Amino acid sequence: MKIPTMIHLRGYLKLAVRGEHVEAFINSLAEAGTPVWDVTPTGAHSAEFKLLLKDFKGLRPLLKRTGCRTRIQERFGYPFQARRLLKRKAFVIGVVAFFMILLTLSSMVWNVEVEGNETIASEDVLDAAKQEGIYPFQWIFKLQSMDKLSGNMTARLQGTSWVGVERNGTRIRIQIVEAAVPEKPPLQSPRHLISTQDAVITHMYAEKGVPKVGINSRVKKGDILISGVLGDEENSERVVAKGEVRGLVWHEYDIEIPLVKTHKVYTGEGKKRSYIVFGDRAVQLWGYGEIPYSQQETLTFYDPLTWRTRVLPLGWMTEKIMEVTEVQRTITEDEAKKEGIEGARRDILAKYGTDSRFVSQKILHDKKENGKVYMKVLFEVEETIAKELPIVYDQGE
Image 1 (cartoon, rainbow, N blue to C red):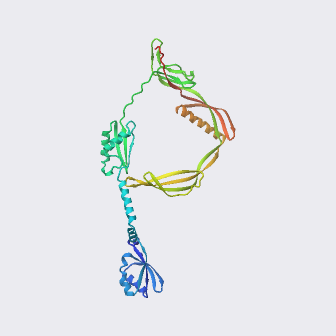
Image 2: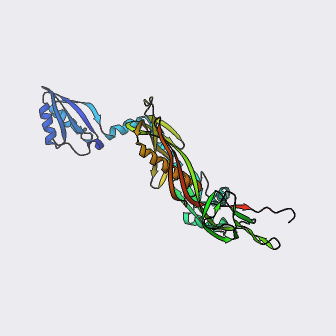
Image 3: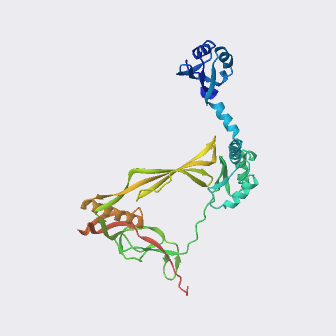
């Protein structure tokens, strides 16, 4: 006979029947329209079959008519599981209490974060938020709408052009946009512009002050490029010299590059550890045991539990321990030279400005020894060479 639908939800029994008229009993069930399935003879006068829980009470008249007896062998389905759980009152109370506590915790504000403030102290923002009812352990349902809180916070905090209040689960984030205040230029004392390097001048622009050198002039480190003193000895005025001076500068580098490079790669072997996270605590569930890898890297993934738009203080964390090994790669002498020169160029740009321009380069000396390439390289670079030097007043002035 065809198995009824949703038998696990409705509950069903596995029965054993004995008697001289077992076959007549089974036929009587079919005639009565009672669904049975998995009918299996177990002897000349016995059989086993399965039947829905709701049809069990209706067997008595048929058993009496055929002179058979039946015995329950197994019980299946949700009704029996629910009954077993109800017998374990402590377990049921614990489950209900857990979900009640979880619901209570998810209905409170746990964290208040402040972002975007630079001149306004975070403590002042938190004090203003507390006056609006935003603070840890506050009930979420007691909070006003986010738009209203945003307007009230903007009115309370001076020096802000906008305050945004956003709730994400049990976390409140306050975003501050401070009002733009024009910066006052710092007061500067009179000063010269002097050279930072021995160089040959390629570009000179004096915005303020008196230029002391011209194009193609050779200068030494510390020479005055633009003077901050205007006029002569009798009638002079000291100003803040401003301008831009560029020149050709020579940098000599000693470069050492190994021909064998060592890199770390993943082998594909790995092991996982799983944790359940409560707030800021994590309890390991799986993945115990020693890690058999001599070299390893650990990748961590966290998946918080959410309800609608709320992020609950409960989640699942997985650590993936990956085995790594070292692989050696041999490069040619030309590749080593190219790599060394590129590294020296990056160092020059980092030290002397990204606006520096390479004019030429010359390898003065190179050799290969002990698995390394050694080079001495001279770079000709056009770069900014001016820096400020305050003018020191004489005591008699």
